[in-house]
View (cartoon, one colour):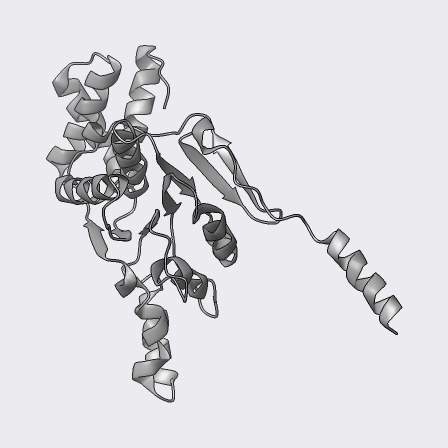
Length: 280
């Protein structure tokens, strides 16, 4: 019996994908984590804007910048949850902060991980644990639906399990929801659970494990116009201020909202009409 079992075991071992190898981190400042097969893919050029072009989020910017610089300098730092209004620069801020701090601390890397790949996060941490570089794990648009168990995988990086979170890793996540799950789902579980207070505690308390909560709120009209003016100045787009104001207000009215994303979309249209090209 032992020979057939050994042959089966050997065959299964040969079929198993090889363990992922850590890449040469000196070759790029940013990577994307891909699971099955596990792989860190270098990103030659990060799609981001300069941090000083992000208007109306000064407090969040300064807090995250200080935390990131602290982390890059080898000091203790918190995981951060950036939550709130859509289109107000949450993911843009993470990428911009990384770019600003990385210019000073060359070993600071950013790794983007998709929500659906969270179950593989322990394998990623194994690759990073003994590296000399420092890593921001970035999960954009993080949220969980009913019966979604992916949130349990986050505890590996938030709490660290028995090994502890690697001291060279910090997690920055963005979400439209403060508690990472819909409010009606929280209420439904509280009403239907045998012990209502415990029914949602595990999921709701996940956001409590982030040391920093940075809230993003809808911008004012003046902030919206300042964003556009900043983009025009940075990219050399010339337009009469009164004309820009009238067009920008009409643009936001047709979309029924006002945000940094809407300001950028108007600017893209304006730059195209003015014949100005740029990367971004």
